[in-house]
Image 1: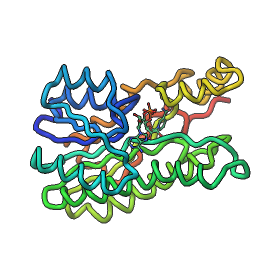
Image 2: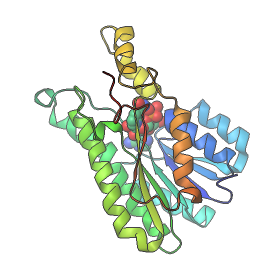
Image 3: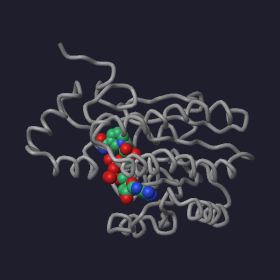
Image 4: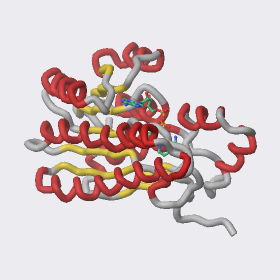
Length: 253
Ligand SMILES: NC(=O)c1ccc[n+]([C@@H]2O[C@H](COP(=O)([O-])OP(=O)(O)OC[C@H]3O[C@@H](n4cnc5c(N)ncnc54)[C@H](O)[C@@H]3O)[C@@H](O)[C@H]2O)c1
């Protein structure tokens, strides 16, 4: 019960890492409100298992009015917001000369503007009592990776935002940290593999990025999010936390 009596919002909590985190937070005593585009069977299962501790709001994190109204509703309903996990994100694949401006703007909008809007409205509710904000970056913010210029730009922006946000809100007892996962096996990666010419070969290539020779699992990242959300990490401020099987700092010869 590491999050007893805490109220958390998790964006993109209906799938993958966000879903695993929602379940782990609930198991640790938190009330969890998922903000995502679509309700699905996994969310329904959480609502059934955890009753009124689990809730779903249909929110597109790029829609300012929806974000503002939904954050206000959570605050009215639960009286506070202790944790914000800015997890919703989409991939962006291609080399810079191949990308259309629409595609560039779309990925920037979800991955960066979404973090801006969610943080803008949730911070207003945290200013008086503090809280923990967890921003989803990626190890791609730190390493060059083929065809990821757009995705890397978004995740690098999120990492940079994390550090400046931390400075701005430290005096309000709000901690802001970032997660930098390596490749985690989720629908996000499954979708990418389904578009590859040779999915098996591509998967084997991705596995080799990690020292572990395996992809991470959503629960690996959820455990890190739990630590950042809990008071156990009270001395972590503006930090990048790597959960990447050694992808950033390790090198196989
Ligand atoms: N899977 C990986 O290898 C990996 C690695 C590093 C970082 N990440 C990041 O982790 C986060 C979660 O990824 P995942 O692998 O669990 O992906 P996923 O596709 O399984 O889940 C992402 C969720 O975000 C939601 N979402 C997308 N756009 C949204 C919007 N505009 N508003 C609200 N919700 C929206 C989707 O509906 C989905 O439920 C993303 O930010 C991703 O960039 C993933």
